[in-house]
Length: 191
Image 1 (tube, helix red, strand yellow):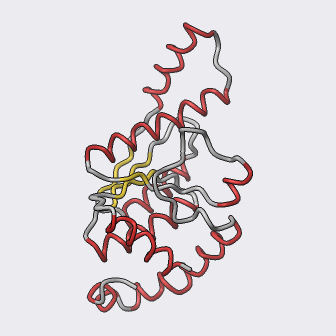
Image 2: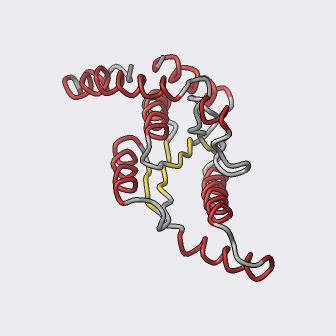
């Protein structure tokens, strides 16, 4: 499954002359697996993977730390860009017009602001924003309209349970192979 996801992602970016893959990295399993897929595509094609962690005060420290580890491991270019102050300005602007904002509205603004940031980065780099939603999230409606859905979705056909199984396989087979044979791995161009 992993190899097929890498191949289909590679075909899409190459066939559409994509110059960069842009990925918001939360520190969760979905963005981690998409980062691993895009890393392989980057190794095979030279197309950079640009990752950003865009935390607010609502992100736990362990999430931000995990996002940093993922970004440093897989991305050609990775940065953590806290967006909390920018979101606060939006909250106050909206509050002046419509009154106090609900926590759900604040969360939706954060998701949409993250996507605006990522799409601007994609525009600058002639790239696309990689989607990290899985089939379970899609069917349950666990996503934000115009907020966290990107241009290309490698995980869109996988249930969350399948993403967990894929991550387990990756950890057991793929990471161990890379650790044991780093030189041969890179010389062969990936998987």
